Image (cartoon, rainbow, N blue to C red; front, side):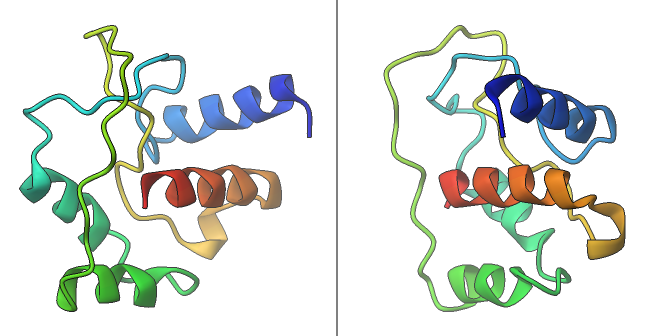
Length: 107
């Protein structure tokens, strides 16, 4: 998949409300996105058939770790991250690949 295709799919996920704004260079979460906020985002994934169990393990077994802090912060948008749960039915196969990639980066 080309970079242009990846960005196109990320934009579509953003337009549907599944991910944050994808056109950002920021790789550092602002202090307002503390662990409580980020854990709530993970809890939104509990019902997903593919990664819901993993999300539950992160929270219920104290395996959650704050995302590593990058050095780039444009202060306009946080790093791209999931914003709500998504079901298999809502995910086209290419969108699913992008969503999984983002979740792996977010972990």
